Image 1 (cartoon, rainbow, N blue to C red):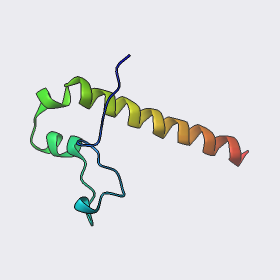
Image 2: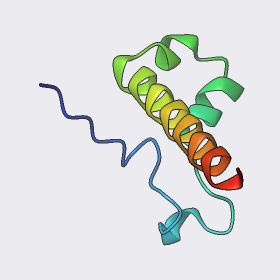
Image 3: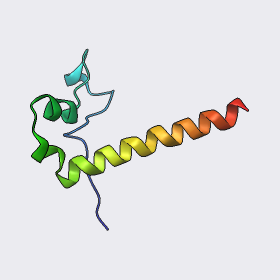
Length: 66
């Protein structure tokens, strides 16, 4: 089993160091055209996780709107 630590790529909304603009490393990688870094397994896992969260949130919202 692999356990990923996304703290360096996405410190989260409570991180005081990234206030007022929230730091998100994947955005920085994309802006710098660093496709090699975006293809890294940690970056890919973070993207997959975030899409899972977005999808799960949408499903729950749709369920409660009915």
